[in-house]
Amino acid sequence: MKRRISAVLTILASVALATSAGATLIENNTNLSAEWTRMPARVAATDSVDTILYNPAGTIRLGEGTWIMAGNQIFPKEYSHTKDGVTHKTTTLTTVVPDFFVLKNGTRWSGFTGFGVIGGGGSLEYDNGIIASSAKALGKSTGELLTGTALPEEVMSVWMGVYAGGAYAVSDTFSLSLTGRMVYGVNTYEIDGGDLLDYEKSGTGFAPIIGLNYTPTPSLNIGFRHEFRTKVEWEVDTIDGAAAPALTPALGEKGATSRKDFPAMTALGVSWKATQDLTLATDVSYAWHDDINWEGGEEGLDNGVELAFAGEYAIKPTFKVSAGYSYANAGVDTEDYSTALSKNAYHGLSTGFMVEPMRDLRVNVGLTKLFYEKDTDSHGITYEKDLWIIGTSVQYKFQ
Image (cartoon, rainbow, N blue to C red; front, side, top):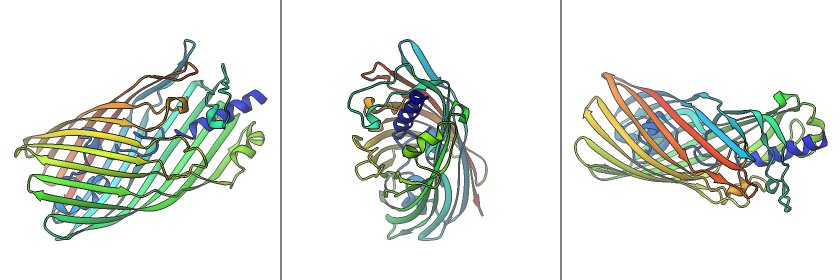
């Protein structure tokens, strides 16, 4: 039992760096909408309600009116780690990653509210267990590895963001925005079906988001936003199971608090209308891990980055097709990977379409495939990931 307790501690220490089941970076999602899944460069977008998420200062350029948007993403996936010819994998399907927003525009102002999944989303279940591997995460310097220790585990993680804000057009070409976002996070761990450990914690925090949009010419648009770091205090909601008494000093008793922030992010994008029918766009998104407080878990992290390029072609005004490429590096060294969820760099390919079946009604369908780089750490554990993102959304403008 003592060895199993040590394995549980090692597993939980390792997943501290990677508890977001679907995040494109360590914690921050960039796949915030169905529009992203078909055209991943969205930071300079001004054509959809999802600009609330990517380019809030650009919401004004949609014109006067009131819109609603509802969307969802599905994650078919296979994550695995292999050592000595034995593979531990999860294929848990995530089917509900929702978002919903309302936007109201006047002549020179906009106001908006809504919610979406800003980090993680979904769960991972390893039926044949995971290898307890991260001695470094426990602060050990010996490189000790609990070889052969594999415990069935289920991990669930999600960060929800609730938004309220608005934008103002300073001039015909320049607008500013201010958004308040409340963050709510939940992490759960079940080991041996909860018999050995059933653990859940949740946390909340609040931080502002600022943005600007500049349109120097009718064919060129520049978008910028900065999401400030969100200070999040977590509280243990549940700690049960046979191992709970022994683990309580390390994990905290029910009601105990700890700190794990949601990182700041800066994003810059450019959109160019190359012809009447063709739009090209590019983005860079940068997640700041320098100033987060994870009670030591952030040590050794680099900042994360995602680059994206995309194009959209209007076959006709009511039907547009799009495609794009993205690359992301979360900023985690291979030696710090969690066997429950590694953070391999990836190359992504996206495609999809937008159709307006009737006036003021718009439907987006997108598909993104993330091609993760295969990594092997110094213990001989090989990490592989395979992920699809399927996005759909419906947007309606009220007359």
